[in-house]
Length: 259
Image (cartoon, rainbow, N blue to C red):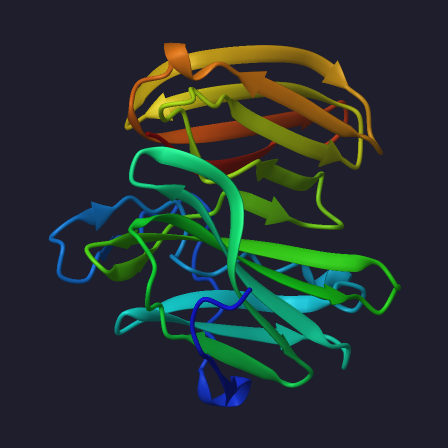
């Protein structure tokens, strides 16, 4: 169901910019008109690029969802010519989590798109970009957003994928948890090599909880679900660290907010 008009625009005109600096970079952006400042783990509104070794197989080089006026502009850069579908989902209204409610959809072969953003209530959202890579596998990227006082603001990553990395994927079920229904915080991840895994939750520099998960195998999806009752309200950084027997440890950080 389309809740607002969707206007196609050329992706080349969007001017997509690659993510600058490491995932722990503290980029900050002010939400339009609200005076609120969103914490950043990586440059806002941009999903991670795949390593060079994987670029030819992945469907996307990069994707972005950039606030523009009261709407959002979507952009992507592909490795092939497969069609791309862009969808916008609302996951919360105020402090109430509503699941994954689709509010806009664009299907385009060679373009990005702009969403006008009308008739939506404030809350948290994510844009989902879907295509097929040159290896025939589906490539899905997600970018988190927040709408506050009628304007969108970018959020840091809650879903990160690197096909050829040690941590091939790390994903939160949604960029928010808790709320009136006390939804838990759900993390899933895949490894390319068996590794000792530690999951740490942080509020600023303070460690809220830490879980040593032992050695976990490669090639399957591992899941961790945490009740929201023992996690303070506000932004929480989920830090996933994997240490293989050979080679250096890898850390990925994702951002969620307890409502």
